[in-house]
Length: 213
Image (cartoon, rainbow, N blue to C red; front, side):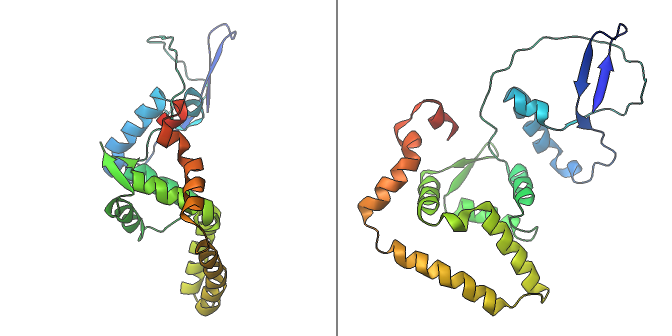
């Protein structure tokens, strides 16, 4: 972070960010990332303040010159939709998937019509919303971020010979099979009622919730 004081020491400004020393993958994703940064600046003010931005290289005690001071008012907006780059970044943060599987994950989402790409942003399709609502209602354990990340970690350990794949498969299948059998007892009415509870804002267009869905 950088603290900036005026000559009288009565006023102070603070900027939080990082100095770019090596562009690395940014030379490929620069255009997409710049669009993400623009949307964040135009969106949630608090999120923009907490987000990391680029700063020029500076030294302690360096005198600064004021070029222009602008007062701006911001209104809270929903977060920007994921692009391919930002979705991969989020998957990495959650420990879901691996570099070798990111492309196939995105392909499945598009090929099965769960989402569509609109101006290089992912937008949920009706099928994707229904499938997500069903899984969250009856198979919530298997779509939790923590469960998926832990499963990825165990797969890595199996590949390294640290875990027995048969035992891991047995433990997974025992609980999963029981959950599948329980789901067979559900009536169509049960499923529709449960799914509608989660999709109500989207189906009936209830105010801000529908716009952000």
